[in-house]
Image: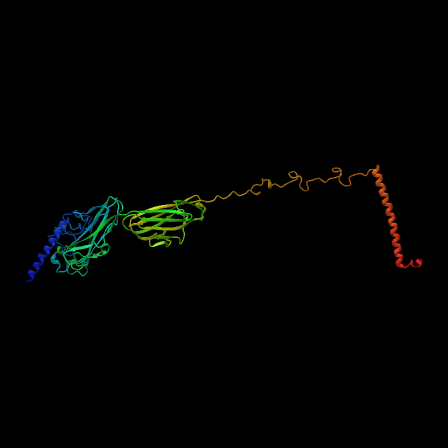
Length: 471
């Protein structure tokens, strides 16, 4: 068979595959869709006048998808709804994201190398949480390398992007990627391949026709699309913070004295039906409270008896990781009340923030009222109050009994003093007293005479004068 016939058959096969793909895409409801928030602004082409080199998603009249610049769309999975640029999400349902890709280079540029896109990749991102007040963006980005002419020695980098949106009437809906649902669809041998999670990174994952290595020739034959599923779930969680002075009785507010230690207990529970990701506790407290080093402990399923953690809860916060549906985590730590008396009678607030799922958070607070004992009034002293009775010096006027305050007694003031009485000259008593005195004088004289005689006798005896007389 001649090369001409072979090429002719190949051409017919390519056209047939392109037609099948176009019909399939039309069934999915992709034809004639309006342009979304695509970019960048770029040169556009048509089916009749394709690009002279490798470029992506720039044909405005694609029979299957319409304007290729609008290449990211979404719909509720399992419904007959068409893919669109925006879908309202309901918890409990699943949604399918669609990303179309097509190298717009003319077929005859493939033989010269101009039509071949190399390092072609696709990446995507989706909102993890939806709020009623905003639209969650789904993005699709395609990047590739190419040359503009056959003499080029350096390849250029191409990039196009588009967006679709999710909304909800239920606040706090979590969007979760359903593992294993990112699949590439095309007419080559890679059709049906599950793409890695690199799809959800900024670097993306390789595209390909027969191999996922990033090589894609020009023409609709080599085009395709990627789909993946998001599950909508409703999150629910409760956060509670209490404070205690003794570690047993818990309340929202306690009274504490300067220098006291107070204990805080934080309880966070996942009451929803889906995991909470990247749960972080951050403590913020008023001046006058200081975290006690080494007092922070975490209690969860893996650490039922408590595990001491770094003292960072009031600095950078503590990341506890993911929290499964129905799971509970507690954090307990202590703080000391300042001894500075300027905090007396003040209420010191302590707030805990639990953030999760990237942009959700809850807060709760506990308070410490600083109670100071009043200083007792000092007792008055003679220095501070010289008028006190005990502070006055006594004198003879205030205390006449004091020594030195009494006049010296005389016979005039006290006739009974010894020597102040006169001896009477007459009367029986006086006569008897005179007789007694006279008798005493006479007796004394006789006593003196006898004593002298006796003494003289003794002296003579000593001298031997009386010995002759005795013979």
